[in-house]
Structure formats: C-alpha cells, structure tokens
Image (cartoon, rainbow over all chains, first blue to last red; front, side):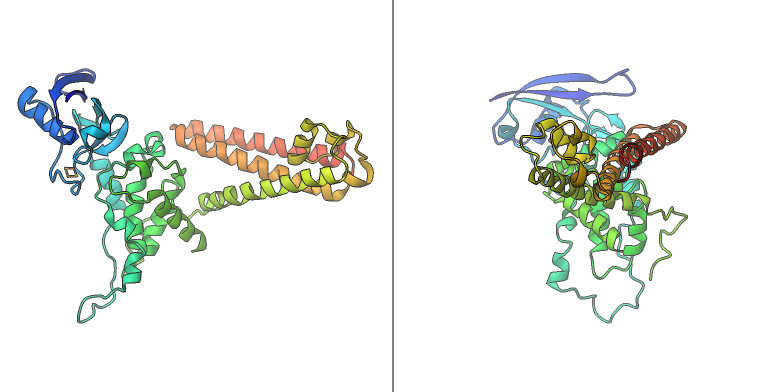
Length: 230
Length: 145
Ligand code: FES
C-alpha cells in the first residue's frame, strides 16, 4: 500500500523554523512506523534524524508523536495508524534536530528522585530475599523504560516544566513500595514539594501514552495517599 | 535510616497536601449537603411552592431569601440557626474549593513570580469578600431568629 509520511523537520544550523517534510512510499500493513523512518533515511533523505536502538520496545529511544499521540515508532504498525502518518518530536523538550529531543531535563528529574536501592543495613550473607507478594506490590512500575512518552504527554508538564512529571514519579513509586528499600522518606519529601505529585491533575494522558501500559495515574494516586497517611 | 540522602533544604510545607485532601473531601461533602438541603426543602413543601430555579438556589445556598419569594412558610422551617450555619458551611466549602482551583490554575500558567504573588493576593481578597458577603447575607440581612 502507498503511504504518505509527514515528518516535522528542523535543523537548527540551517532552518529558522521547523517545516514539514513529506515522503511517499510503499509499505506493508505490518510494517512499523520505525521501518518507514529507516527507509526514508536510507533511500530518500539521509539527513533525517531520529533515535532508535533496540527496535523492539525495550530501550525507550524512539518515543515520538505519531498522529498526535505519543508512541514508540517501533511498536506502531502501519495498519493501525493509517495511510497518512504525521510524525513530530516529543513535546515539551527542546528539539536537537528533527525527531531527536534533548532528554537531559527529563533525566535530571529522574535522577532527582534517587532512582536506586537505598538500604544501609548490613547486607545478609545471601541476597536480600523478597516474597512474591511484596514484589507484586510494585510490579507495574518496574516496567518503565524511561522513554519519556508519559511526561511529554502531560499538560501539567507542558504548562510548567519544573513539574517532576509522571515518569519520575513512577520510578519513585518503584522504590517507595519496594520492601527492601529504606529511602522512602527521602523520596516522599521530594515528591511532596510543590513541583512534585500535587501538580498531577489526573488528566490520564500519561496512561494513554505509556507503551508499557503502566497504570501511571494510579501509581501517582498511591503516592499521594501514602503522603496523606504519613 | 538513610534519611540523610537527598535531604537538602526542602520546604516541608504540607499546604499542597492539605489542599489536595480538602478538594476531595469538600467535593463529596458539597454533594451530600446539597442533596440533603434540597430533599428537606421538598419534604417541607417545596413542590408546587418553589420553582426549579428556587430549588437549585436553595440546594447550594440555603438562605431563606430563596424561598420567601415562593409560598413556602419561612418562619419555623428555614429561618433558624441550623440553616444559617448549614448555609455558611456549604458556602465555605464551595468558595474555598473553587478559589483553590483557580489558585492551582494560576500556579500552572503564570510564570512570573511577582505577578503570581499579586494575583494570589487578589484571589485571597476575593475569597475573603465572598465569605464576608455570605456571612452578611446569612446572619445580618437575614437576622438571627
Ligand atoms: S527502538 Fe527501543 S523502544 Fe523503540
């Protein structure tokens, strides 16, 4: 089938403002949007810039706005997005070139919630054992691949980029509800600040955007409830 | 345990937490209070006496002015301390719930700190004057029975 791909292009060294690049190509319904981008770069315009690594929905490199929604290009099939495919870079992060955005502001927030196991009790002789039930408690939030699709779909984040954003809260949730971790208080103090969980207005865009189907708004709600009872 | 990590100078203010909780609780409470006052008004002789507009006004601001225009007997039923405080409570919840919502929106969209401070001050004054007006209507204009 013939498809038309429109890509929001911008090269800061040449362009004053972004423009739409339009490409006509032949595609299979089972092709992924990522395949189309690879084809365009390989055969039509080698200057097209985008990130991808695993191409299997695991590394989180290729989140972008596809037909208005935040999606991983490597998980979207042509048959699900239609014959006209409009692709834009993620919103709310500075564009470096074409579809590549500067992820540093995003990762700075990720680092700020202390995304590592904190436990200064003396280590046991073997590993720190955890029951399946205790593991189940935070299973959902372990699935995050840090693709930034949720945070860049969040109107609260667009309105005010000092907001931590859903991804950072999901990562904090992953450790706060881990019974081997002892850093919950430090993390909750960060999340309780004005730019923390209270900026979440339960808009649910993040839930729609998440390629891992994490119930993000529920995780944020659990953190809010925990802050209330603390 | 491990509390030293990330414990740089942080605002320990619980204001946002309390306002978040208040918004939820007041939302539910307003519905319950509004439902009770409208049911009461109808039991006491609302149907036929109060038109739909008066019923709605009564539901969310039970003040006897809203029924004096109709043929409901104001005297023992509505003009008493119970309904005055009921009205005050409902108004307090509604005004604070709404004003806090505007505060949150301002915080999202106003980027200049000075402008934000002024707008917040203005909002606070509006909130206070609304409460003042409600207290006047409920307790002075209506008169304590
Ligand atoms: S390329 Fe790795 S998630 Fe899409």
